[in-house]
Length: 340
Ligand SMILES: Nc1ncnc2c1ncn2[C@@H]1O[C@H](COP(=O)(O)OP(=O)(O)OP(=O)(O)O)[C@@H](O)[C@H]1O
Ligand code: SF4
Ligand SMILES: [Mg+2]
Image 1 (cartoon, rainbow, N blue to C red):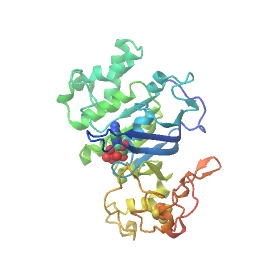
Image 2: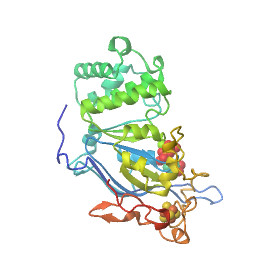
Image 3: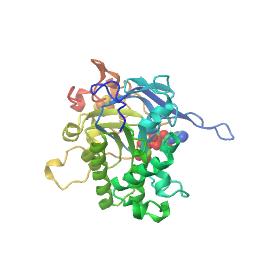
Image 4: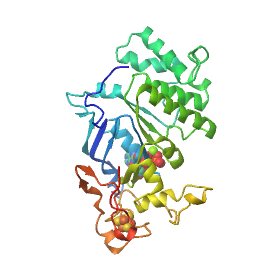
């Protein structure tokens, strides 16, 4: 594996500062509508080398848009993404080089594979584009098939329709690893699998992370899975970061009222893990016209009049780092500071 490390272990692999993505909407024939969807609205966070950062939040809160921004599949309106100390797209880190070091696995295992390519050719494709001779690329593909638990003799010559969903997702993981990346973004990568296959693929991801020294951004709506996989967790609400913290701490002592409500929706038989917090009611508000002040105030059990007027101090920066939880409202009983 190539050693691309530039800044050493203390430098975050990814530093995201003030990222914004608004999608403009078309007007109808009568000139109605228009406006913008504020999919991602000023988020800042780090991904540390070798960690798994879990990303959670309700449907539509901006998780996949964040992933696509991180991958540079779409352009942000504002903000900066720095990869191991180098701004992506500049002369220090051209986009092609960044794309070798960062890969993504999507939810839909079928859509990501070319139906006309065998598994071996699918995995070998990107290395060949990056100049690896075909023979070497194919050998690497076969090796990766074996690493993800698919015997090359049986699976190398098959086409996507000749595999199960779990097997296809293993091929997608092998494909993502073929360029020997440092960062892998997994967007609901196991959500379409049934529970037993899901567990196998999750454990495979953990093994591969160890073996290849990978860093993961792990997006999922399944909070139990995120807890199992992540070192730290980022909670998003309506395009913003509500809270970010160490997984263990965040799940045991969620600080933000939104995180507490979200966690209380996890089904559990364990009486110690049941909370007094009412679960979330209704759908999140419209991201075209998000609520004023704190975006969560329309659903927050602790909301006061001031919450509709003033955004919480989520933009606070303490010693160069964003504050851990967006809500510092005393009424919510939010503790002010804890380890991130
Ligand atoms: N190309 C686009 N044009 C307009 N709106 C978009 C576009 N892509 C995403 N959106 C909107 O941006 C918001 C965030 O979408 P995104 O896909 O990031 O959410 P998500 O958190 O990944 O949701 P889910 O859990 O359902 O996958 C949503 O309101 C979505 O409708
Ligand atoms: S700022 Fe107010 S509405 Fe927002 S989470 Fe805190 S208490 Fe709830
Ligand atoms: Mg999504």
